[in-house]
Image 1 (cartoon, rainbow, N blue to C red):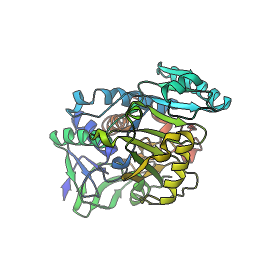
Image 2: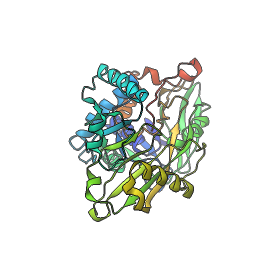
Image 3: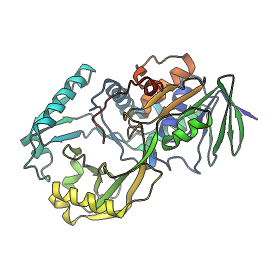
Image 4: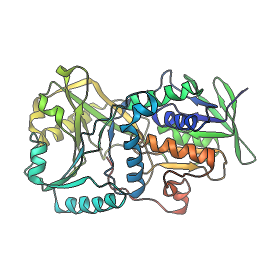
Length: 391
């Protein structure tokens, strides 16, 4: 039987961050168990790669502030590039209610130390995104340190640094069981053999609920498809855009960064309210037409844009009832640590999550950030968190 101090189930960006932070803290007796033949074939490799601090709850703002600062200095920490580009997020308001929401959100953001969020007028929005039809725009909110990253680059950087410290990575290996003895985890059963351990981290993304059930723990995480449609062959003015979010319906778009400049385009996304939970990872052709209509209505120049089928994709959000992550030790099962339910924010909050989990595992408490509000027991306690800034 293999032994390890910590077993991490899931080799995506969150699991990789936990492994990195454990190793940096001196705990390298860690095994990452990844079900796929390669890392990044789950949600990490299908993410849009946005990072932002423009949230409406203190814990999400703090998670973002820590993570963005880390990603800005990622190469110094890991020896690899994160791809961080501070091109900004622009929330576009089309009603007075939207403006009031942005104003209140900015007050919360400033109270948490995010000082560079700007409320801007309609003319400023038009100047920043001249391609956009803006007759109904009344203003917006912009934060210049929000931006884009490379999800796979971050995952690889965390993993390679952790492995250099001694962390082991088991690819193409499925977890088949988690043994619990006298109220604590004791081993993880896999298709490659058993691993005796004192601590298990559930970082399995959309499969989090299934993995938790192996230890007799129930968590309210469900998979929900999010689809991204890529365009190509747009003019160079689109390359300089921030992430643009239309608050009227949640439609958002961003430049699609590539090495082939001739193929530059946009990534288009929209949280389709008709989407139902399930492990669906195929791109729906009807969704392509829905988002094309929204894109053309807001950005008329996209009417003739060619859809890039190869770069269009569907991935899975791991969604909780309050759209906040579940971070902490599971109730009634000692040694089972949860890092789940990020609801689309897993990549951007991976650095903070890794730091917090490493502290919880090694010290029994989180020192760097207060994540008490994200505790697993909040659902049973009826203490859900309200986050209204969900994409």
